[in-house]
Length: 260
Image (cartoon, rainbow, N blue to C red; front, side, top):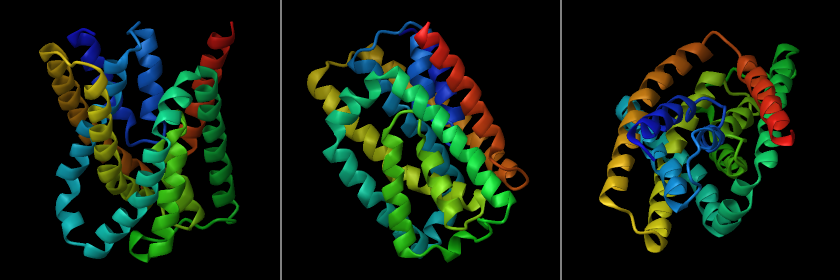
C-alpha cells in the first residue's frame, strides 16, 4: 500500500462513516479498485482508520455528551448487545461476510430499498419521525443497539441500521443521526482495538505500516469532521431518499460487474 492509496482510503472512510452508505462496503470495493492485496494488514487498516472518523465526533460533541449523563447511559446500554454479538461472531464476520462480494452488493441494494420504503411510510404519515432524543427510553436504546448488529453485514451500514430503527420508533432523522454518532464512539473504538490485537498477534506490523495507519487515521478524522457537519445540516431539511437511490444504482452497477 502506498501513501497515496492510504490517503484515498482515508478520504473515503471519513466521508462514508457517518452517512448511511456503509463505509466498510466502500473501503472493500475501493481496495479492489486500487488492486490492494487482501491481507491481514488491509483488514486491520480498514477497521483502524474508522477510529479516526470516530475521534472527529468526540471533538465535535464531547461537551454535549458529558453534559447529559442520561444520554451517555443510553449510549452504553445500546453498546452492550453489539459488543457481545461482535465478540461471539468475530470469526464468522471476518471469514464469511467479508468474503462474499455478491452478498455485500445485494445487502447494499436491499438497504437502499428500505430507505425508500421508510420515506414512503413517513410521507404517508404511517410513521411520524418527529421525536427528539430526550424522549428515547432505555428499552428503545437497547433495541437500537441490538439492531445495530445488522451492520455486521458489510453493505448494511451501522449508521443506516440505527437511523432506520429510530425512524420506526418515531425519532427525527437528525436526532437518529446524532445518536448514531454517539453510539459509534464505543462501538468503533472497541472494534478497532479488538482487530488491532487480533491482527498484531498473527501479523507483524512494520514501522512503515504504522505510518500508513497514522496517515489513514488523520485523513479520515479531517474528512469525517467535515462530513458530520454537512450531514446534520442536510437532515434538517431533507429526507434519506438520495441515499436510497445512491445505494440502489451503485449496488446494481457493482452486481453487474461481478456477474460479467
